[in-house]
Image 1 (tube, rainbow, N blue to C red):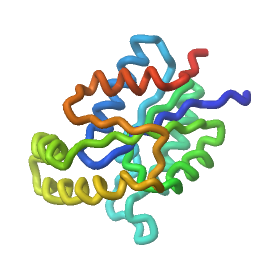
Image 2 (image 1 turned 60 degrees about the vertical axis):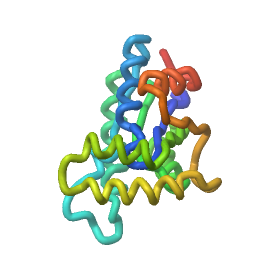
Image 3 (image 1 turned 135 degrees about the vertical axis):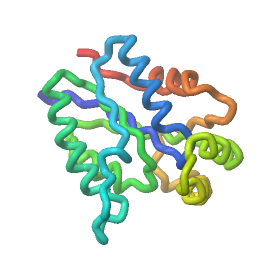
Image 4 (image 1 turned 30 degrees about the vertical axis):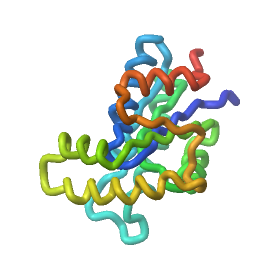
Length: 177
């Protein structure tokens, strides 16, 4: 079968709501009875210790993603939603090697640093808060560069997760059968 698999890659800085928006996207897809799989890439790439030559664990993440997609597509999934910080095109290049039938749409979420700090302070209750706020600041500056992969951008300031997810769902051609 030569069908293209829609892959929606929800990116943005730490704290912008990638996983929450992804969760809402899949809720909408379920209501519409659209076969799909949702992967929070952070959850499938993390291990300790990380190899020196793969400090973010992406190689492990892609190996796991290949297995997850193989199993989910056998079970009837036709669409893939992934949340992860995508800083350069190499991530997408690897993704399309792992899932060669994939057609990637990258949605870059953004928010002000003030909004990100508020969201992070509400979710990070341990020692990682400082790291997350620093990383968010780095990403706010770098993810707006023209070299950052983005098919379209959504400013999340003052918007609900539902509004953002509805916008994403309405802009994608999903496979339904």
